[in-house]
Length: 255
Image 1 (tube, rainbow, N blue to C red):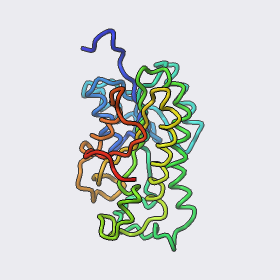
Image 2 (cartoon, rainbow, N blue to C red):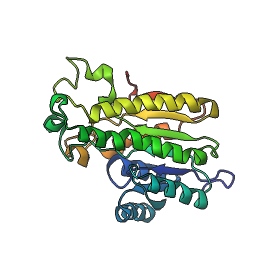
Image 3 (cartoon, rainbow, N blue to C red):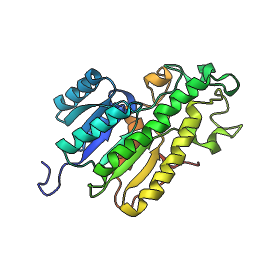
């Protein structure tokens, strides 16, 4: 049982009905947090929340589409009414833009042939949507004694790694949408961290690694639970934890 003097932490995860988001939700529930399962499709969100409750967790589905600010505002209003604050925000919702395609087959991302609408769509979810969600949830996070924001990024967001001709990304197709969106997300993470540092809000970018999910047509070699580990670690940092960081489970990554 939780100590009465320690109120249960409330954690919101976007895109939490599958993949890394769902695995993060499962681990938060195991830690005794109240988990808010953000999902575009309320039915899928409710299925996930029900599964977490069946396993003994405290979970609630929340309709949230990061590209629809009205749903984000409504989610924030509901959280305020129900809980009055938010301790953890995980911006996990993300799209590749290519659908369920492995990176080596994402020919629609090659810079010289890219459709600009594809780039816009990916940035709308992976970058602009994060701004919308953070700004809507900040008043709630400020009421937490230890607020944490984790933006789910990717090793592909590292300019150092992707520019290395002998590195792990050299064999993959160049990407003018997904990969730059994660680089932009990393930059955004640093700027939010700098603004919120004085308020004790720690903001970091997590790189889960190459995880077996729908988004890469299940070509990843890590399980969602393994990918979620770094997200959970950054969401539960102590007061002396890093901020403005870009980290994988193995530690800091080059920008």
